[in-house]
Length: 92
Image (tube, rainbow, N blue to C red; front, side, top):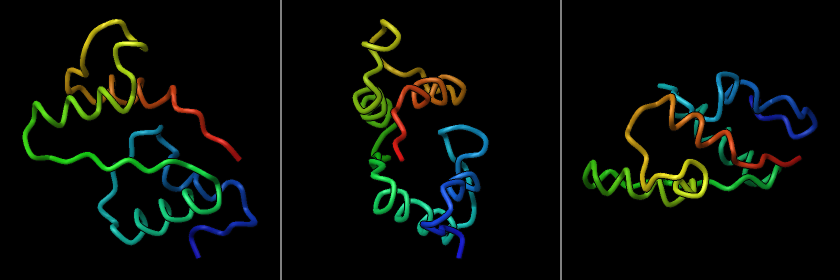
């Protein structure tokens, strides 16, 4: 089992490179996010990909972009997304 609730380091597999996660293993993603929400009280946000502008708007709203960085919206760069998501509070 990838997400062992007795081991507080199991989220390391999914988040070892920062809060922005890229994985091609759908089962790893599904199992890990379900465990983080249920066992660690994480919030799980899904952003719609209807259009590039609306996607940028959703990300910016979720991550409080203006409050964090002083400008209206995320610019689409992954480094900036990682920085924005880093401000999220992760709880045990």
